[in-house]
Picture 1 (cartoon, rainbow, N blue to C red):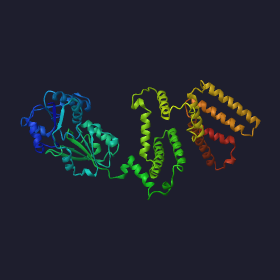
Picture 2 (cartoon, one colour):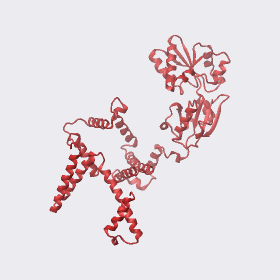
Picture 3 (cartoon, helix red, strand yellow):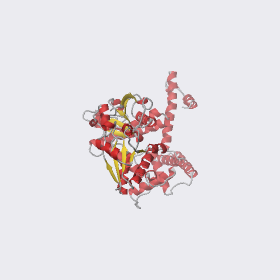
Picture 4 (cartoon, one colour):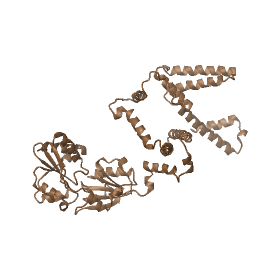
Length: 487
Protein backbone atom coordinates (compact mmCIF):
# COMPACT_ATOMS: atom_id res chain seq x y z
CA UNK A 1 0.00 0.00 0.00
CA UNK A 2 1.32 3.47 -0.92
CA UNK A 3 1.21 5.38 2.33
CA UNK A 4 2.85 8.26 4.22
CA UNK A 5 2.16 8.53 7.95
CA UNK A 6 2.95 11.99 9.36
CA UNK A 7 3.83 12.30 13.04
CA UNK A 8 4.19 15.40 15.16
CA UNK A 9 7.25 15.52 17.45
CA UNK A 10 5.58 18.09 19.68
CA UNK A 11 7.08 21.30 21.00
CA UNK A 12 8.94 19.89 24.00
CA UNK A 13 11.02 16.90 25.00
CA UNK A 14 10.43 13.15 25.01
CA UNK A 15 8.34 13.14 28.18
CA UNK A 16 5.60 15.08 26.39
CA UNK A 17 5.50 12.82 23.32
CA UNK A 18 2.26 10.77 23.07
CA UNK A 19 2.86 7.04 23.58
CA UNK A 20 1.40 6.10 20.20
CA UNK A 21 3.71 8.51 18.36
CA UNK A 22 6.70 7.25 20.37
CA UNK A 23 5.97 3.62 19.44
CA UNK A 24 5.54 4.41 15.75
CA UNK A 25 8.88 6.22 15.69
CA UNK A 26 10.71 3.43 17.51
CA UNK A 27 9.14 0.51 15.68
CA UNK A 28 8.92 1.77 12.09
CA UNK A 29 11.30 1.52 9.17
CA UNK A 30 11.79 4.30 6.62
CA UNK A 31 11.54 7.15 9.12
CA UNK A 32 12.25 10.61 7.72
CA UNK A 33 12.43 13.84 9.74
CA UNK A 34 12.08 17.33 8.37
CA UNK A 35 14.87 18.29 10.75
CA UNK A 36 16.88 16.53 13.44
CA UNK A 37 17.23 19.79 15.38
CA UNK A 38 14.62 18.95 18.01
CA UNK A 39 14.89 17.91 21.71
CA UNK A 40 12.91 14.68 21.10
CA UNK A 41 15.34 13.50 18.42
CA UNK A 42 18.38 13.87 20.66
CA UNK A 43 16.75 11.76 23.35
CA UNK A 44 15.56 9.13 20.87
CA UNK A 45 19.07 8.85 19.44
CA UNK A 46 20.25 7.73 22.89
CA UNK A 47 17.78 4.83 22.59
CA UNK A 48 19.19 3.76 19.23
CA UNK A 49 16.64 5.53 17.07
CA UNK A 50 17.51 5.49 13.35
CA UNK A 51 16.17 7.92 10.77
CA UNK A 52 17.04 10.13 7.81
CA UNK A 53 16.69 13.93 8.08
CA UNK A 54 16.21 16.58 5.41
CA UNK A 55 18.58 19.11 6.97
CA UNK A 56 20.89 18.87 3.99
CA UNK A 57 17.99 19.85 1.72
CA UNK A 58 17.85 23.18 3.56
CA UNK A 59 21.54 23.72 2.91
CA UNK A 60 21.42 23.24 -0.84
CA UNK A 61 18.26 25.21 -1.68
CA UNK A 62 18.08 29.02 -1.77
CA UNK A 63 14.44 29.36 -0.64
CA UNK A 64 12.10 27.63 1.79
CA UNK A 65 9.57 26.95 -0.94
CA UNK A 66 12.21 25.01 -2.90
CA UNK A 67 13.13 23.11 0.29
CA UNK A 68 9.51 22.10 0.85
CA UNK A 69 9.06 21.10 -2.78
CA UNK A 70 12.12 18.84 -2.71
CA UNK A 71 11.15 17.20 0.59
CA UNK A 72 7.67 16.53 -0.75
CA UNK A 73 9.00 15.04 -4.01
CA UNK A 74 11.40 12.70 -2.17
CA UNK A 75 8.74 11.43 0.23
CA UNK A 76 6.17 10.82 -2.51
CA UNK A 77 8.73 8.90 -4.55
CA UNK A 78 9.76 6.77 -1.53
CA UNK A 79 6.12 6.01 -0.71
CA UNK A 80 5.63 4.39 -4.11
CA UNK A 81 7.73 1.40 -3.02
CA UNK A 82 7.23 1.20 0.77
CA UNK A 83 5.26 2.88 3.59
CA UNK A 84 6.98 6.00 4.94
CA UNK A 85 6.97 7.66 8.37
CA UNK A 86 7.52 11.42 8.26
CA UNK A 87 8.18 13.34 11.49
CA UNK A 88 7.80 17.13 11.85
CA UNK A 89 8.17 19.50 14.83
CA UNK A 90 4.97 20.37 16.71
CA UNK A 91 1.70 19.16 15.21
CA UNK A 92 1.60 18.17 11.52
CA UNK A 93 -1.26 20.53 10.76
CA UNK A 94 0.18 23.62 12.46
CA UNK A 95 2.64 25.73 10.45
CA UNK A 96 3.84 22.83 8.29
CA UNK A 97 3.91 23.64 4.58
CA UNK A 98 5.36 20.23 3.61
CA UNK A 99 2.35 18.51 5.15
CA UNK A 100 -0.07 20.56 3.09
CA UNK A 101 1.88 19.77 -0.09
CA UNK A 102 1.84 16.05 0.72
CA UNK A 103 -1.92 16.09 1.36
CA UNK A 104 -2.57 17.86 -1.96
CA UNK A 105 -0.25 15.77 -4.13
CA UNK A 106 -0.75 12.44 -2.40
CA UNK A 107 -4.42 12.63 -3.31
CA UNK A 108 -3.56 13.13 -6.98
CA UNK A 109 -0.95 10.32 -7.03
CA UNK A 110 -3.11 7.80 -5.16
CA UNK A 111 -0.84 7.84 -2.09
CA UNK A 112 -2.60 7.68 1.27
CA UNK A 113 -1.39 10.45 3.58
CA UNK A 114 -2.37 9.91 7.21
CA UNK A 115 -1.96 12.36 10.10
CA UNK A 116 -1.09 10.38 13.24
CA UNK A 117 -1.11 13.17 15.81
CA UNK A 118 1.38 15.04 17.93
CA UNK A 119 1.23 18.00 20.26
CA UNK A 120 1.22 21.50 18.79
CA UNK A 121 3.85 23.94 20.02
CA UNK A 122 1.00 26.39 20.67
CA UNK A 123 -0.27 24.80 23.90
CA UNK A 124 3.03 25.02 25.78
CA UNK A 125 3.65 28.43 24.20
CA UNK A 126 0.34 29.82 25.53
CA UNK A 127 1.25 28.35 28.90
CA UNK A 128 4.70 29.93 28.86
CA UNK A 129 3.28 33.33 27.89
CA UNK A 130 0.22 33.02 30.14
CA UNK A 131 -2.16 34.38 27.50
CA UNK A 132 -5.68 33.42 26.42
CA UNK A 133 -5.95 33.25 22.61
CA UNK A 134 -9.71 33.80 22.70
CA UNK A 135 -8.95 37.50 23.27
CA UNK A 136 -7.80 37.64 19.64
CA UNK A 137 -4.89 35.66 18.27
CA UNK A 138 -2.81 35.44 15.10
CA UNK A 139 -0.31 32.76 14.12
CA UNK A 140 1.99 33.96 11.33
CA UNK A 141 4.88 32.41 9.43
CA UNK A 142 8.18 34.25 9.83
CA UNK A 143 9.39 33.02 6.44
CA UNK A 144 6.56 34.81 4.60
CA UNK A 145 5.60 37.61 6.97
CA UNK A 146 3.70 40.52 5.40
CA UNK A 147 3.12 43.85 7.12
CA UNK A 148 -0.51 44.12 6.01
CA UNK A 149 -1.38 40.75 7.60
CA UNK A 150 -0.38 41.81 11.11
CA UNK A 151 -3.22 42.91 13.40
CA UNK A 152 -1.50 44.79 16.21
CA UNK A 153 -4.59 44.65 18.43
CA UNK A 154 -4.31 40.83 18.64
CA UNK A 155 -1.91 38.50 20.40
CA UNK A 156 0.51 37.83 17.54
CA UNK A 157 2.76 34.77 17.45
CA UNK A 158 5.31 34.57 14.67
CA UNK A 159 6.60 31.03 14.29
CA UNK A 160 9.58 29.53 12.45
CA UNK A 161 12.10 32.22 13.34
CA UNK A 162 14.86 29.81 12.31
CA UNK A 163 17.95 31.99 12.15
CA UNK A 164 19.33 35.55 12.53
CA UNK A 165 18.44 36.45 8.93
CA UNK A 166 14.75 35.59 9.42
CA UNK A 167 14.81 37.30 12.82
CA UNK A 168 16.12 40.45 11.11
CA UNK A 169 13.39 40.30 8.46
CA UNK A 170 10.74 39.88 11.17
CA UNK A 171 12.17 42.83 13.08
CA UNK A 172 12.15 45.13 10.04
CA UNK A 173 8.58 44.13 9.14
CA UNK A 174 7.33 44.76 12.69
CA UNK A 175 9.13 48.12 12.79
CA UNK A 176 6.91 49.28 9.94
CA UNK A 177 3.98 49.10 12.39
CA UNK A 178 5.50 49.43 15.85
CA UNK A 179 8.08 51.60 17.64
CA UNK A 180 11.66 50.32 17.65
CA UNK A 181 11.58 49.86 21.44
CA UNK A 182 8.21 48.06 21.57
CA UNK A 183 8.54 45.14 24.02
CA UNK A 184 8.26 41.69 22.45
CA UNK A 185 8.89 38.18 23.80
CA UNK A 186 11.12 35.51 22.28
CA UNK A 187 10.14 31.95 23.17
CA UNK A 188 12.51 29.02 22.52
CA UNK A 189 11.54 25.39 23.00
CA UNK A 190 8.34 26.10 24.93
CA UNK A 191 7.41 23.10 27.07
CA UNK A 192 10.87 21.53 27.06
CA UNK A 193 13.24 21.43 30.02
CA UNK A 194 15.54 23.83 28.21
CA UNK A 195 12.77 26.24 27.25
CA UNK A 196 13.44 29.94 27.41
CA UNK A 197 11.22 33.01 27.55
CA UNK A 198 12.93 36.38 27.09
CA UNK A 199 11.47 39.88 26.94
CA UNK A 200 13.36 42.46 24.92
CA UNK A 201 12.84 45.61 22.83
CA UNK A 202 12.01 44.98 19.19
CA UNK A 203 15.28 46.46 17.88
CA UNK A 204 17.27 43.74 19.69
CA UNK A 205 15.42 40.79 18.15
CA UNK A 206 18.13 39.74 15.70
CA UNK A 207 21.09 40.22 18.02
CA UNK A 208 20.10 39.57 21.64
CA UNK A 209 19.05 35.90 21.32
CA UNK A 210 20.18 32.76 19.52
CA UNK A 211 17.46 31.40 17.27
CA UNK A 212 16.66 27.86 16.12
CA UNK A 213 13.77 25.96 14.54
CA UNK A 214 11.83 26.03 17.84
CA UNK A 215 11.97 29.81 18.22
CA UNK A 216 8.83 31.95 18.08
CA UNK A 217 8.28 35.67 18.59
CA UNK A 218 5.31 36.94 20.57
CA UNK A 219 4.02 40.48 19.99
CA UNK A 220 1.64 41.64 22.75
CA UNK A 221 -1.52 43.51 21.71
CA UNK A 222 -1.13 47.26 21.33
CA UNK A 223 -2.88 49.15 24.14
CA UNK A 224 -1.69 52.68 23.29
CA UNK A 225 -4.29 54.10 20.87
CA UNK A 226 -1.71 56.48 19.36
CA UNK A 227 0.16 53.47 17.97
CA UNK A 228 -2.96 52.64 15.97
CA UNK A 229 -3.03 56.00 14.17
CA UNK A 230 -1.31 54.45 11.13
CA UNK A 231 -3.94 51.70 10.89
CA UNK A 232 -6.75 52.05 8.35
CA UNK A 233 -9.18 50.47 10.82
CA UNK A 234 -8.47 53.27 13.31
CA UNK A 235 -9.23 55.92 10.69
CA UNK A 236 -12.56 54.23 10.00
CA UNK A 237 -13.36 54.33 13.72
CA UNK A 238 -12.50 58.04 13.91
CA UNK A 239 -14.67 58.99 10.93
CA UNK A 240 -17.57 56.87 12.22
CA UNK A 241 -17.26 58.60 15.62
CA UNK A 242 -17.28 62.05 14.00
CA UNK A 243 -20.53 61.15 12.23
CA UNK A 244 -21.95 59.23 15.20
CA UNK A 245 -24.61 60.29 17.74
CA UNK A 246 -22.02 61.95 19.99
CA UNK A 247 -19.90 63.21 17.11
CA UNK A 248 -19.11 66.60 15.64
CA UNK A 249 -22.11 68.81 14.68
CA UNK A 250 -20.33 69.99 11.50
CA UNK A 251 -19.44 66.47 10.32
CA UNK A 252 -22.91 65.15 11.11
CA UNK A 253 -24.65 67.75 8.92
CA UNK A 254 -22.49 67.19 5.83
CA UNK A 255 -23.85 65.62 2.64
CA UNK A 256 -22.26 64.48 -0.61
CA UNK A 257 -23.32 67.81 -2.15
CA UNK A 258 -22.01 70.01 0.68
CA UNK A 259 -18.58 68.33 0.57
CA UNK A 260 -18.01 68.85 -3.17
CA UNK A 261 -16.13 72.13 -2.85
CA UNK A 262 -13.80 70.74 -0.17
CA UNK A 263 -12.73 67.81 -2.34
CA UNK A 264 -11.81 70.18 -5.15
CA UNK A 265 -9.89 72.49 -2.82
CA UNK A 266 -7.96 69.60 -1.25
CA UNK A 267 -7.05 68.18 -4.67
CA UNK A 268 -5.52 71.49 -5.69
CA UNK A 269 -3.59 71.71 -2.44
CA UNK A 270 -2.08 68.30 -3.23
CA UNK A 271 -0.94 69.71 -6.58
CA UNK A 272 0.58 72.67 -4.76
CA UNK A 273 2.53 70.36 -2.44
CA UNK A 274 3.79 68.35 -5.42
CA UNK A 275 4.93 71.50 -7.19
CA UNK A 276 6.69 72.68 -4.04
CA UNK A 277 8.40 69.27 -3.73
CA UNK A 278 7.53 69.40 -0.04
CA UNK A 279 7.08 65.82 1.21
CA UNK A 280 5.68 66.74 4.63
CA UNK A 281 3.16 69.06 2.99
CA UNK A 282 2.26 66.34 0.47
CA UNK A 283 1.63 63.80 3.26
CA UNK A 284 -0.69 66.26 5.01
CA UNK A 285 -2.61 67.19 1.86
CA UNK A 286 -3.02 63.59 0.72
CA UNK A 287 -4.44 62.94 4.17
CA UNK A 288 -6.97 65.72 3.60
CA UNK A 289 -8.03 64.15 0.30
CA UNK A 290 -8.36 60.76 2.02
CA UNK A 291 -10.49 62.43 4.68
CA UNK A 292 -12.91 63.58 1.98
CA UNK A 293 -13.12 60.05 0.57
CA UNK A 294 -13.73 58.62 4.04
CA UNK A 295 -16.43 61.17 4.82
CA UNK A 296 -18.28 60.43 1.58
CA UNK A 297 -18.00 56.69 2.31
CA UNK A 298 -19.29 57.15 5.87
CA UNK A 299 -22.23 59.18 4.60
CA UNK A 300 -22.95 56.34 2.18
CA UNK A 301 -22.77 53.82 5.02
CA UNK A 302 -24.95 55.94 7.33
CA UNK A 303 -27.56 56.21 4.57
CA UNK A 304 -27.39 52.47 3.94
CA UNK A 305 -26.20 52.68 0.33
CA UNK A 306 -22.49 51.79 0.38
CA UNK A 307 -19.38 51.74 2.57
CA UNK A 308 -15.65 52.24 2.11
CA UNK A 309 -15.44 48.47 1.53
CA UNK A 310 -17.55 48.87 -1.61
CA UNK A 311 -15.34 51.73 -2.80
CA UNK A 312 -12.20 49.63 -2.29
CA UNK A 313 -13.78 46.59 -3.97
CA UNK A 314 -14.79 48.56 -7.08
CA UNK A 315 -11.36 50.18 -7.55
CA UNK A 316 -9.55 46.89 -6.87
CA UNK A 317 -11.66 45.13 -9.52
CA UNK A 318 -11.08 47.96 -11.98
CA UNK A 319 -7.30 48.01 -11.47
CA UNK A 320 -7.03 44.25 -11.99
CA UNK A 321 -9.39 44.29 -14.97
CA UNK A 322 -7.61 47.17 -16.69
CA UNK A 323 -4.08 45.87 -16.05
CA UNK A 324 -4.10 42.44 -17.72
CA UNK A 325 -0.36 42.90 -18.43
CA UNK A 326 0.21 42.82 -14.65
CA UNK A 327 -2.55 40.57 -13.31
CA UNK A 328 -3.23 38.40 -16.36
CA UNK A 329 -1.81 37.30 -19.67
CA UNK A 330 -1.82 40.68 -21.39
CA UNK A 331 1.22 42.37 -22.86
CA UNK A 332 2.17 46.06 -22.64
CA UNK A 333 5.79 47.14 -22.61
CA UNK A 334 5.49 50.94 -22.73
CA UNK A 335 3.38 53.55 -20.96
CA UNK A 336 1.71 54.47 -24.28
CA UNK A 337 0.69 50.83 -24.84
CA UNK A 338 -0.76 50.74 -21.31
CA UNK A 339 -2.89 53.82 -22.04
CA UNK A 340 -4.08 52.32 -25.32
CA UNK A 341 -5.04 49.03 -23.64
CA UNK A 342 -6.76 50.94 -20.83
CA UNK A 343 -8.94 52.83 -23.29
CA UNK A 344 -9.76 49.63 -25.21
CA UNK A 345 -10.82 47.84 -22.02
CA UNK A 346 -12.77 50.88 -20.86
CA UNK A 347 -14.61 50.99 -24.19
CA UNK A 348 -15.40 47.26 -24.02
CA UNK A 349 -16.77 47.66 -20.47
CA UNK A 350 -19.19 50.32 -21.66
CA UNK A 351 -20.25 48.36 -24.73
CA UNK A 352 -19.13 48.87 -28.30
CA UNK A 353 -22.00 51.13 -29.33
CA UNK A 354 -21.35 52.39 -32.88
CA UNK A 355 -23.88 55.16 -32.30
CA UNK A 356 -22.10 56.49 -29.23
CA UNK A 357 -20.55 59.95 -29.70
CA UNK A 358 -16.78 60.13 -30.20
CA UNK A 359 -16.50 62.85 -27.56
CA UNK A 360 -18.24 62.10 -24.29
CA UNK A 361 -19.00 64.87 -21.85
CA UNK A 362 -18.09 62.98 -18.71
CA UNK A 363 -15.90 65.87 -17.57
CA UNK A 364 -18.54 68.58 -17.78
CA UNK A 365 -17.98 69.51 -14.13
CA UNK A 366 -14.22 69.92 -14.57
CA UNK A 367 -12.57 73.35 -14.60
CA UNK A 368 -12.85 74.48 -18.21
CA UNK A 369 -9.15 74.39 -19.04
CA UNK A 370 -9.10 70.74 -17.98
CA UNK A 371 -12.33 70.09 -19.85
CA UNK A 372 -10.90 71.61 -23.06
CA UNK A 373 -7.84 69.39 -22.67
CA UNK A 374 -10.05 66.29 -22.31
CA UNK A 375 -12.24 67.19 -25.30
CA UNK A 376 -9.20 67.70 -27.55
CA UNK A 377 -7.65 64.39 -26.47
CA UNK A 378 -10.83 62.51 -27.36
CA UNK A 379 -11.04 64.19 -30.76
CA UNK A 380 -7.37 63.41 -31.43
CA UNK A 381 -7.98 59.68 -30.89
CA UNK A 382 -10.03 59.50 -34.08
CA UNK A 383 -7.57 61.58 -36.09
CA UNK A 384 -9.21 65.01 -35.70
CA UNK A 385 -5.93 66.71 -34.79
CA UNK A 386 -3.02 68.72 -36.14
CA UNK A 387 -0.17 66.74 -37.60
CA UNK A 388 2.33 68.48 -35.31
CA UNK A 389 2.61 71.42 -32.92
CA UNK A 390 3.23 73.88 -35.77
CA UNK A 391 -0.36 73.50 -36.91
CA UNK A 392 -1.59 74.08 -33.36
CA UNK A 393 0.61 77.17 -33.00
CA UNK A 394 -0.57 78.59 -36.34
CA UNK A 395 -4.11 78.21 -35.02
CA UNK A 396 -3.15 80.24 -31.93
CA UNK A 397 -1.83 83.02 -34.19
CA UNK A 398 -5.01 82.92 -36.25
CA UNK A 399 -7.20 83.20 -33.16
CA UNK A 400 -5.05 86.02 -31.73
CA UNK A 401 -5.45 87.95 -34.99
CA UNK A 402 -9.22 87.50 -34.84
CA UNK A 403 -9.22 88.64 -31.22
CA UNK A 404 -7.21 91.75 -32.13
CA UNK A 405 -9.62 92.54 -34.95
CA UNK A 406 -12.54 92.26 -32.56
CA UNK A 407 -10.75 94.57 -30.12
CA UNK A 408 -10.36 97.14 -32.92
CA UNK A 409 -14.04 96.76 -33.75
CA UNK A 410 -14.82 97.23 -30.03
CA UNK A 411 -17.54 94.63 -30.31
CA UNK A 412 -20.03 94.77 -27.47
CA UNK A 413 -22.16 91.81 -28.52
CA UNK A 414 -20.10 89.16 -26.74
CA UNK A 415 -17.96 88.46 -29.79
CA UNK A 416 -14.80 89.64 -27.99
CA UNK A 417 -15.40 87.11 -25.22
CA UNK A 418 -16.00 84.41 -27.84
CA UNK A 419 -12.72 85.18 -29.60
CA UNK A 420 -10.88 85.20 -26.28
CA UNK A 421 -12.27 81.73 -25.57
CA UNK A 422 -11.02 80.59 -28.96
CA UNK A 423 -7.52 81.84 -28.07
CA UNK A 424 -7.53 79.88 -24.81
CA UNK A 425 -8.83 76.74 -26.54
CA UNK A 426 -6.08 77.01 -29.17
CA UNK A 427 -3.42 77.48 -26.48
CA UNK A 428 -4.69 74.33 -24.72
CA UNK A 429 -3.97 72.46 -27.95
CA UNK A 430 -0.36 73.63 -27.88
CA UNK A 431 -0.02 72.47 -24.26
CA UNK A 432 -1.39 69.06 -25.26
CA UNK A 433 1.25 68.64 -27.97
CA UNK A 434 3.96 69.38 -25.41
CA UNK A 435 2.32 66.90 -22.99
CA UNK A 436 1.69 69.20 -20.05
CA UNK A 437 -1.65 70.01 -18.47
CA UNK A 438 -2.73 73.64 -19.03
CA UNK A 439 -4.60 73.68 -15.72
CA UNK A 440 -1.42 72.84 -13.85
CA UNK A 441 0.54 75.35 -15.91
CA UNK A 442 -1.90 78.11 -14.94
CA UNK A 443 -1.85 76.93 -11.33
CA UNK A 444 1.95 77.28 -11.26
CA UNK A 445 1.71 80.77 -12.76
CA UNK A 446 -0.89 81.78 -10.17
CA UNK A 447 1.40 80.57 -7.38
CA UNK A 448 4.35 82.39 -8.93
CA UNK A 449 2.33 85.60 -9.17
CA UNK A 450 1.28 85.31 -5.53
CA UNK A 451 4.89 84.79 -4.38
CA UNK A 452 6.16 87.79 -6.33
CA UNK A 453 3.28 90.03 -5.38
CA UNK A 454 3.80 89.05 -1.75
CA UNK A 455 7.35 90.39 -2.10
CA UNK A 456 6.00 93.63 -3.61
CA UNK A 457 3.53 93.93 -0.73
CA UNK A 458 6.28 93.35 1.82
CA UNK A 459 8.43 96.11 0.28
CA UNK A 460 5.50 98.53 0.33
CA UNK A 461 4.79 97.72 3.98
CA UNK A 462 8.45 98.21 4.91
CA UNK A 463 8.34 101.70 3.37
CA UNK A 464 5.52 102.76 5.67
CA UNK A 465 3.64 104.27 2.70
CA UNK A 466 0.38 103.11 1.05
CA UNK A 467 0.29 101.45 -2.37
CA UNK A 468 -1.21 104.62 -3.85
CA UNK A 469 2.03 106.54 -3.22
CA UNK A 470 4.00 104.23 -5.57
CA UNK A 471 4.14 104.49 -9.33
CA UNK A 472 3.70 101.40 -11.48
CA UNK A 473 7.39 101.59 -12.41
CA UNK A 474 8.38 101.55 -8.72
CA UNK A 475 6.12 98.58 -8.02
CA UNK A 476 7.45 96.86 -11.12
CA UNK A 477 11.00 97.31 -9.76
CA UNK A 478 9.99 95.38 -6.63
CA UNK A 479 8.47 92.71 -8.92
CA UNK A 480 11.71 92.37 -10.89
CA UNK A 481 13.62 92.12 -7.63
CA UNK A 482 11.43 89.18 -6.60
CA UNK A 483 11.97 87.62 -10.02
CA UNK A 484 15.75 88.05 -9.69
CA UNK A 485 15.63 86.37 -6.26
CA UNK A 486 14.02 83.31 -7.83
CA UNK A 487 10.51 83.86 -6.40
